[in-house]
Length: 562
Image (cartoon, rainbow, N blue to C red):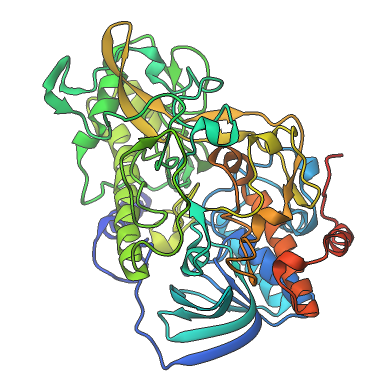
């Protein structure tokens, strides 16, 4: 009976994971709601974006006596921390202070906690602070009065008029609606003099997850270019050091279990085994390759995925990262070009929010089908070596997590979206402490880390093969400060907005800053700064840094490496 029950659960999970209808409990990015009667909300601070930065910003501002409204795009708060990423990317633990440390202390551990428990704690902390939390609020537009946001309008029919606004989304949607300058993609090497910038950087990840340097043919029929490329491979454009509009790959941080109650990997209705033809070929290229089902850097070893109890990440040459599947996510556009000089920054919305949400929903569902299909492929396809299939089948989805969305994470790991361009741009020089800003609002310390940006055809030793490009993992020598100027727009563009997630940063530096504990730190500091701007009736750019620093230290934020 127990086996039958679990099979039924798995079947139900499979049905609604891939179903295209808009129904309750589906894992979706965008769920339209019928607008209610128009409502005007007045408050001190609007925090838009359900990420950990949004949570800490809202709580901190409320603790300082401000009337805070916290809008989350989906039905959850906590972003990736409550959406699957619980093998926390801590960097150096000594750099984590303030409310981030409070959160980890209250949940009882800094890593490998339950996503559901994380969201529950975030809600408790928000309730304790008296924050008005509203879920499923999708941004429609921002009304500007010169260089100030006058009001923000939502599809729900609500209009929020605040004194200060915080964009805590992973994508920078409110920032873009306010016509603040931003970039998407990778800068050329020469823009900021970064060795990690642009295509084909040479100092990191040259041999990691590169199909063990084996000559794996990229063509549908091996060695026959006329047969066309296998799925998920591109020809590539540009040369080493060039920039482009590509962003690092996304995935879902699925939670797995090898316990008796595990749920067998279901077959998505849109399952297409041809999507995994490159992996199938790689699995059979050389019998000497050792499949670790985990991270590895040893020669002739590969993932192809990480499988462990709990948060299971991308780990392999062809893995759960959907390389190339996310290029339109940030702002709805993508142009397949390369450039040696950085183009002018973008301002405004190239497509409407209605169109953008539609694009993102398609990308979201494509990622669900890709990754769930990958797991089904590894568990069932006869092209997968039998011993590997047996090992994969020891695991399944964890029935204790993400019960409302078929045991599949509700949050896509948006590792990078828009990046603001303000008066201070965090770069590789900051991460390496070769440049140190004097207006620190918190520390980051994780290595500069980018997942692959493209999978392309290359020629090695006269043989046409396939390689991944854009990945790096380069250490920072010590914790380094993040500048306050990097989270506020240029004063000429907007004076009552802070952006602690899609902050002003190069692609290389953002790879280090983009960690959930750092977002909590920057969110809390933004909550303090926004409150101080309100108290003095000044622009966020004019906040007295010495006073801000004093308050942050009182709140036990760490501002310099110890």
